[in-house]
Image (cartoon, rainbow, N blue to C red; front, side):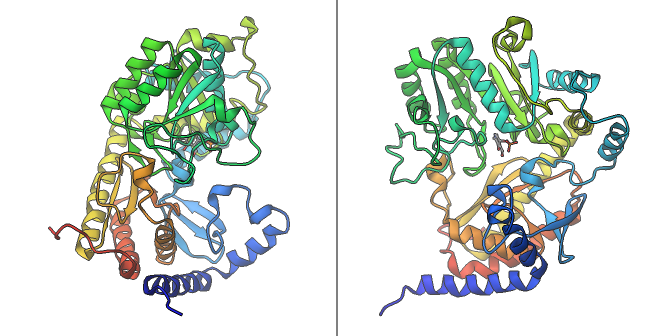
Length: 463
Ligand SMILES: Cc1ncc(COP(=O)(O)O)c(C=O)c1O
């Protein structure tokens, strides 16, 4: 029987890299086995799982984490981009320690909520009013509900490949298979999960990111029923793909003309500018969803925007109910205030410049090795696109990078002490120094060299 030589090479290399991973992490293997007896898959978050098993961490400081086997990793995940100041930032610890002595949640408003709300409203001029919740998932859920209630329209439009958390409306066409996804200009709404309410497939329309003509056509065709367009100004889990300014501006114009609310999900992208991508590109949404960095490492979400839309949450209006036992809890509020105070414009632009330099250096590594691929993303968010040499504009473009090779690179990086998302996304944090980035480049060079035989040669000549 004939075997595909490339598949055989891949299997051999995966076996080798996996064996090294297992050799380095026996305590994590045992911890996963014990955890699996009480939690499905041994963890409590789907995203954190990877093959053969995730590492159990026991300690974090600055931009490094240490696992149960005592191995230390440079952390380029930062709890999925949220730990912009790394682990255990001294000023955040001081604020939280002080707050712990005074109670964590009062079931009553307190001034730290006002302080964090004021900081956010100052940073994002589109926020006339804001509310807190405990996750980005809740933030997008409430923003969508507010838009539906305000307009009296039943549907929303999201982007193919867009990620807005794990509620029903968000779980449409996040990572649809190309077999089900329909045409590029008019994608089909594909549920990402069983168990969603049946109506969600008809009520959540899907558009191709960065394709203005196609998106405008869908919005115009459904305007009478459409409450909101929701999108990440940089498509995140689909491959850190920035929207063009023209696309966002075009969406602003068509939504204004048709009475549809424009919601930016800046849960991740708020790290890219003091006022998020909306400030960077000068496009003002009606509502914004936030999370991650604004909690200083503690659970948080926030949503806000136009005063007339947010007024629906005023209890005196008796219109929209927003519960949440830990909404605005004192720990997340205090930590969030410090995290933002430590993130002035200068700190953000330094982090973005470090990201640009690292991106350039990693692209040079790829070119020197002569393998096809490039590192994209924007500012302090980077994305490895193995085997793709064209610019990546949307979810479908990013599918050309083989997931299995990306995952092998992830394991090869872990074996060299670099911790990141299996999907090839890397986030910088403020504790990172030039020496840390030098170390990262060395890890990438070695890991890419190890898997280079699986990658096709670059089409372009080495410069
Ligand atoms: C763009 C975006 N929106 C929403 C969410 C959901 O946030 P959370 O995980 O806090 O529910 C995420 C999480 O990764 C995200 O990346």
